[in-house]
Length: 136
Image: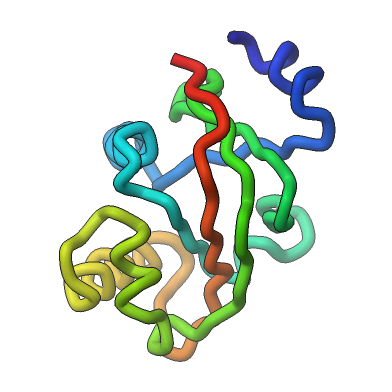
């Protein structure tokens, strides 16, 4: 399905990409498709003026492949702001990328260091979502 059709089908939907490159993006989309990934997070700073659109509970959003084509449609179920150091194991495991909180912390610290800097006290936007449509 093309992006314009999805925006008509889901009025008010925002678009976003997982990860910071094609390989990570594809991997994370695959985790959502498999049902293993039902949560995601981002640095609060990335949602400031001119940044990514802040998720909203109840809104459906379109996940894009790295090339900008539609991959998935998800609905935000829960939204919290939490310091990195306070992220729970339950949330970390819902992200589907690791089997332990420590693994999640290591991978996400590396991600944030690549993308604007890391601080254990940094605020994160933590989102739980459900898959609505696979655009494959």
